[in-house]
Length: 521
Image (cartoon, rainbow, N blue to C red):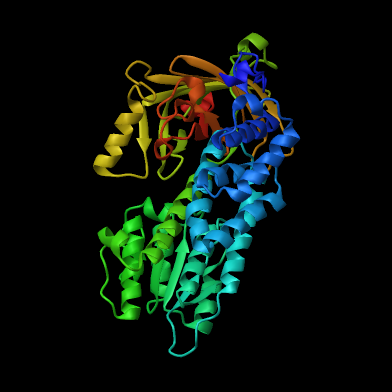
């Protein structure tokens, strides 16, 4: 309302009259919100120049330690990529509150807010990397400021690392700090660590415990196989595992493995571990707020939560986003080169893989079957075609039993794809263009995707190959915005609670096989 009354900002609009804001607009809105939150009337703010607003915001953020004000100030400094401002806010909080309280009361809520900004597209990877690097620096300095524990009596030792392919180390670094400040010996050997590296470190240090987090998918082997391999390779070491890829799979770990699947599991291990070192009786998780060791438990609570926040930021479906546009003319209407030959889609060998996730927590993967289809080939080139998606076949691949059935039923309901009313979807190829600069694709395919009777055009990369049996068209994973096809359940635009938001982006990967007419016979 004040936006219109005081003419402070004019939103931009798309061709379909949808409002949107640019980076400069977002900065201005954040400044206005922070000033208004701190008691300055909107009529007065409207008269300020951008420079005056920035000066006032800087002054408020230095004297007001209410966490909402600090979060707004940190968000602004991240969007502006202002290292001086970001560092000043964190350093001032650390000086006033201490490092652990700053992490608990400022940094973690900021990471939560970052998850929402990432979801809504308000920040980009460069801004996120900028922020992560500065927080990482602070944690490393805090680790370095803690003296090494005395050699005698020999303290418990922990080996911390991230496996090959893992890059998100903030939570592991903070766990390093928490263990070191409690006088444990910690050996952090870094990220992208191989089994050989772990073996070499073990031979040198003989640590008592190993701790790691697995949040990304393994390419060549399963998480369960990796954990079992480590357990049998290091039978005399206690192994602690956490991370999305660990907690989302059900399996029976070996005896020397502890899965920190929920926050209470992390609490229980660390409380029991602390009690063994001090000889004091361990408290149950229900008594956290009443124990004299509350400071330690609150910090460990943050460590687990920060891991969840980072999974939330990084468990989004990967791949290039396929922007949805208005439906376009079909290949038949555009014409094709030469006389086309029809290849029949092999429905048994073809499939669509999907991936969806919440903003924080759950991620699921599954498949959709191809009901029928055909591809048009002219002069040994793919020129058109269409295939039908059997929406009743939507299947989840990472759950079992009742949980699997419940999720699949929900996906087929009116909340999502409403398969009783819309039992099929279609993809109709409109244009196929050769590309030469993409190692994962030989062509770009433009087509009309129809779901829930809504048709939008998308362009996706694909590797198109001919063989003696027929043709294979395989895409790397790409993403679509489900809301463009009216799949709105717990979408970001609906004001859903943060821990319930399901990402608008859905990951898809198409594996299509078609056989030439002679092969069918």
